[in-house]
Length: 119
Image 1 (cartoon, rainbow, N blue to C red):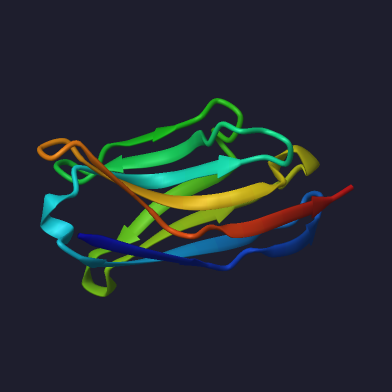
Image 2 (cartoon, rainbow, N blue to C red):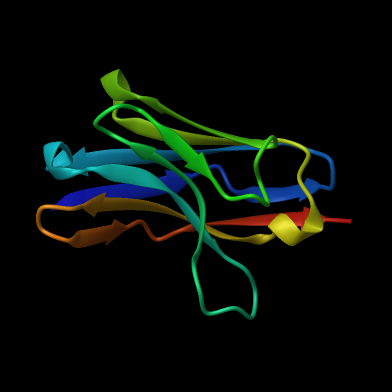
């Protein structure tokens, strides 16, 4: 089992910045991909924001956040980060930390943290 706990959400004005954190614990060696997804108000789908492959550290970003958001990890402290700059109102969403094990095909989710960007 893997446990994920997000923090760092809040209210920010357009153009501002926030940094989200995700504390990872449990069977972390089983994780192949870890990253962030978000669910905007009124939408059912949780869209990919950014992800890291644990094998080689390669990163992938959604086109909507490329160049504005940066995903990183601190392995010593078992923490994943999402630095969000130049925030836009359309970035408003609940942001979830997400981990995937390809061997077991298990998806793990945190409870989410709300980011609200005012115009």
